[in-house]
Length: 103
Image (cartoon, rainbow, N blue to C red; front, side, top):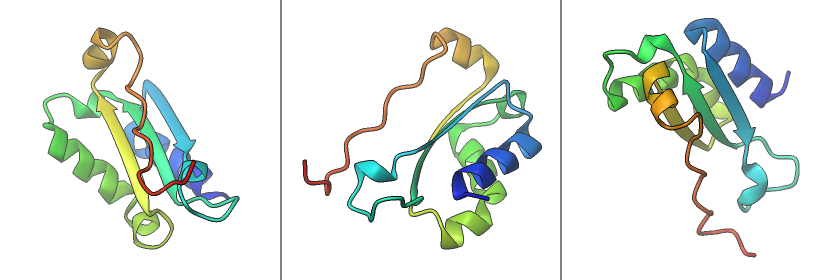
């Protein structure tokens, strides 16, 4: 199973998301081709209701603790309640460009 698939499976199992997008953004960074080390996650779940942003990040980090300790170098998290996601028009802002990537 790929790192991306593992992330998707774990987040789906724990959060039962209304929306989940996991994007491997490793190619945007200075890593070897085919790497799975930099990810962007957009997650919408009822479990974030009443939770402050830091608590939401901690929840995700706990679910992905094993992957963060060995596989994942960078994890961009866009975490929403269903109401926040609706107000955002169903879109999350894009990841910023990597400062170390030579274009």
